Every structure is written in structure tokens, then in C-alpha cells.
Image (cartoon, rainbow, N blue to C red; front, side, top):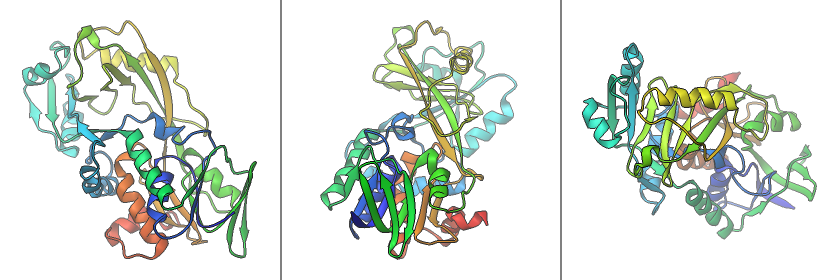
Length: 358
């Protein structure tokens, strides 16, 4: 089956790119699993906090704001709180400067989150410029837009071989071959593996595990309107989720690409760090899971044609910013692939280009 654009990867990166590109030609998307967003995209904490990340990531996230605000019901108010303990002043002050959070009195923070422990939390910062992302709705909106323009999505379509042809690329799967002039590598933790299959030089991406635990609402409190909370230095975070609380140790443990699961000891250590800041102990886990957040060597997304073969396009290294940057990232990818003058600055395009790795 031949197309103009062939995308490997059915997470938020690949699906959003399919939506954008489907207005310019025939799109085929291949997803190795039996459903979209099976790996990192389906296990995200799903917050739109546009000041989170390095400068190029922040620029992409800020540029995504108009899209989010125009998308009904995709965003809902959440807010963000950072907690500092004695001896953490330098880290606390760096975090609140980076994320544009004003420091507030402890009692103001505890009025919102009554389980904060005054014996262990010495400084608090709070802002409302963070929103929950309905990740399923966003993903389905992009998928619906792509399919309405004729894009073909193939599940259980793991690439077994990738071959350069006279007209572009051929990707072989168990159910058949797929061809296109342009190949878009949006395969998440597997991006370097995909490149190697295509005889393209890998760029050095590293998947890192992040574990999550879902616990009952602490002390029976209604957590609906609690902000997302971070231990300063991102040593843990907690976020309301459907009447319960998600708590993560916020670890980054290097892993090979695989279907990740939580490490019990790492979870226990992270939950202990969370417990140090609150008055309610964790007595029960409702569930736990893990995902792989994949970073490039400089921890900035890679969006652009390969330096050696411009028909091979990188859309990779989303790390923990995939959903919140997806509107702008997918639009930039589409602009670069189709030759449309991008709205992104030349400096941002250079900062995201795979050519920066030589």
C-alpha cells in the first residue's frame, strides 16, 4: 500500500502528525500494539504547564496554547504547587523562578491542601497556570481529524524491516508492506531502533522509566480541586485523578525500550518522600504502573529531516513534554515536511533539528 507519508508510531507524536499531514496527502500510520498510545502516551501525568522544561520545549509548549484553548474540554483547571523543606531553599528558589510561581504563605497553601505538614514543609509556591489535559480526548480528536482526511491507521503493525526504495521507503509488517515517499519516525522509546532498521545513524536517545502509584484520597478528603504538587527539585509529585491521588517518585532510570512496569522499591522510596510532606500516611495502593520518557542527548525534542537522508524525518525525544507540546510540534513537523513556511522561529527550528548532533 502506497502513501505520501508513512508514520511509525501511534502515540501522541505520531497521531498528531497524522492529523496535520493528512491535509496535504495520503497518510499511513503504523502502530506496533493493539491500540494507540499504548506506551508513554497512555501513561502520562497529563499536565499543561507551559513553563516546564528547557527553553526550546517551553517555546513549543507556549506555542501550543492557542490550540488547547480553542479545543473544547481538552483543558481543565488544575494549578501547580511546589513544596520546599528546610535546607532546600536554593532548589526551591530555582524551581519557582523557572516555572514562574510566586511564593505564598504556608497557610494559604494548606487552605487548598489541608494535609500539608507544617513540621516538614517550610516554603510553598502556588500558581493557577497549569491545566489537566484530557489526553484521550486530545488523541482521539487528532485521530478523528486524520481519518476524516483519509489517513489509514494500522494496529498490530510492528515493523519487521525498513527498506529504502527508488520512490522512498518500504516498511514490512506481519500484515503486509507499506510504502511512502517520506518516513516519519515517531516511535517513542524505539526511535533509535527504528533508525537502525532504516540504516540511518541513531542519535543517542535514552528511554527513562518513571513509576506511578494511585492511592485513595488522603484522609477521605475531596481532592478534586487540589493542585498538582511537586517536591522541589522534582523529587516526587502528586496529582488528583478521578477522586484519588497519583503519586510518582519522579525517577529517571535508564532502560532499554520495553513495556515498562513500576519498580516496587522505587515506588516505596518515592511515596516515603511524599509522606514526609503530608500528615496522612499511605496505607493502600489502588494500582501502579510505569512509562518510559525518552530524551535526546540534550533533553530537547528532535524535529526535522535526517542530515544524511531528508526523506527520513525525526519526530522524537518528547520526554515528559509530549502532550503539552504536541500541537506546535506536529504543526512544525508538517510545515517542514511539506515545505510550508513555519511560524516557528529559525532559532527554534535549529534547536530542534537532528543536524545539531553532527
